[in-house]
Image 1 (cartoon, rainbow, N blue to C red):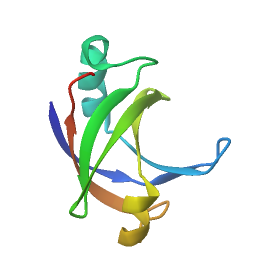
Image 2: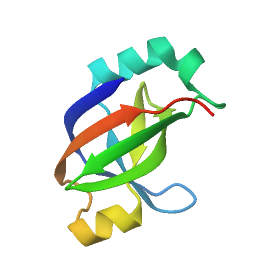
Image 3: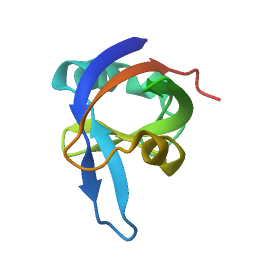
Image 4: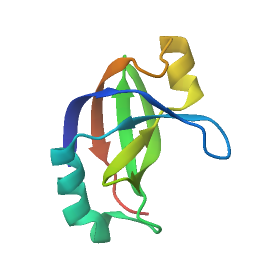
Length: 97
C-alpha cells in the first residue's frame, strides 16, 4: 500500500513532546480496513516514509479516528519542521514482521 499526501504537522505534549503528521481520512480508512493483517500489535502499522527527500521507517498508530505518522527528530530538525508546517509525505506500508 502506497500513499502520497500533504499534512499539517501537529505537536502532542503527551508524557514527552512529539511531532506527528495526521493521515488524511481516505488513507486512514484504507489502512483501517487492512489493519488486522498489517498491524504487529496494539494497532500500530509499520511504514517507510519520505519527507523532504529523507527516508525513514517508523510505525503509524491509531489516534482520534485517524493514524498519526511520528516525525523523528532526525528527520524533522534538519528540515526545520515544526507544528503548523504543511509537509508532503510519500509513505509505503511495510510487511508485518
